[in-house]
Structures are given as C-alpha cells and as structure tokens.
Amino acid sequence: MRWVVLALMWFATPAAAVTCADITYQGNSYTACTVDPAREDVRLFHSDESGSVLGSFSAVDDGLAGQRLAFGMNAGMYHPDRAPVGYYLENGVQTMRVVPNAGPGNFGLLPNGVFCITDKTAQVYETLRFVAAKPVCRDATQSGPMLVIDGALHPRFLPDSTSRFIRNGVGTTADGTRAVFVISNTSVTFHEFGALFRDFLKLPNALYFDGKVSRLYAPALGRSDFGFQLGPIVGVVE
Image (cartoon, rainbow, N blue to C red; front, side, top):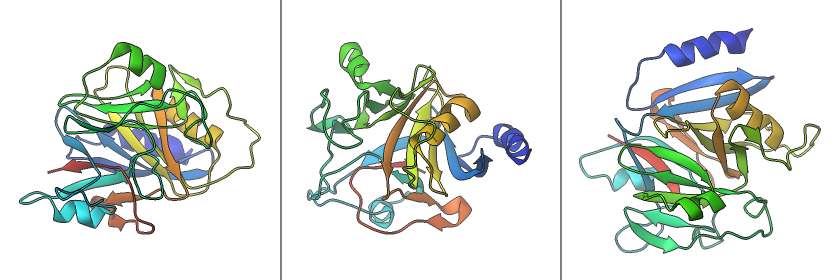
C-alpha cells in the first residue's frame, strides 16, 4: 500500500517552482518531478553563445545570470559529439530536423515522439502527429521510443522483457498543462516504465528520453547526478 500513500501525498502537494517526490510502483523506485508550464519557466539547453556544448547541470546553472536552475534532466538522445539525434529547437532556433523514419536503437523504435514546449504548455506528440499538426513550439526535442501513445503502451514493449536499465522520460496531460519528468532509481524494463506513466501517473502520452546515461538535478531533494557529459537538457529556471 506504500505507493497508494505516496500517490495521495503526490497529488496533494501545493504547486511550487517544481515539485519532486520519490515514489514506488510495482516494486520499483522512481523520482518524479511535476511542472506547470504556465507558471514555471521550462526551457531546453544544449550549447552556450559560443556554440560549445554545455553538457552538465552545473554549466547550465552557471550560465543563468541572476537566475538559478531549479530542476534539470537529460532530454533526448545524442551522437558522440553530443549533437541531438532528432529534432531540436531551442528558443525558436532549429538545429536538427525531424527524423520520421525507423532506424537503429531505441530512438528508431517507432513510434517515437517530440516533446514540445511553449510559453504556456508542454506536450508530448507522436512524431508523425507532430509533423501533421505542426504545433508552434518555442523549444522541442525528439526522442524515442514513445512510452505511452493516447493511453496505450508502445506496441513493442514486452511484459516479460529482461532488458533493465536506469531510464528517464516525460509524460504530459492531454492539454499540456502538466508535465511529469521521471527517472527510475532501480533498473526497469520499458514495459514497467511505460506502465508507471499510464497506470500510476494517469498520463495519456509519455516519451522516453534515455537510459544508462539518465541524470536528474533536483536541489530540493539534495540530488545532482553526475557522469558522462550530456547533450540536450531540459530545466526549470527561477
């Protein structure tokens, strides 16, 4: 029953710059951070003004003159040079096109998706729907696979899978008024991770960001994960 108690605490917590909590579901531990994009400054970060890749939460925080990073998470797959694998848009500037076709690795395990941020909303779109709808995003990052598509788990996820990693991703409400960023604290399968978003968090759409290199910056929890340098980073600035 522990996860039920945590769920009640989770949804009863007053809104803040970003609200993070540790939760347990089906025997796995996660940390989830809820963001209201209409009230909070959600942004993507990749490179500084000189074009050098930031790569870490500390580099992002150091570049926020007069402000601070209240939350951060790696936000999409990247090449060895840390360039985004798929579509990337930051403050209205596109540096990588949409990749709509299947390909190798988790990114190419269609359907994949795009996380789109505006000044008031944050929403996960399946990639082909994103291309057709042409939403006007301020920031956007493409990753894959989708974890949840219109309330259904990705069709390739297997309940008896043995592939387990630390994983992270984001889920959004249908209207884009709430985004929940989650990182697993124990190794989980895709099926377990997707079920968390669909069945526990009750979010109709969710997108996988990455595994193995998953990182979280949550100073309210005293947490600042470190490791290999990152590509795209999503954060809340205050």
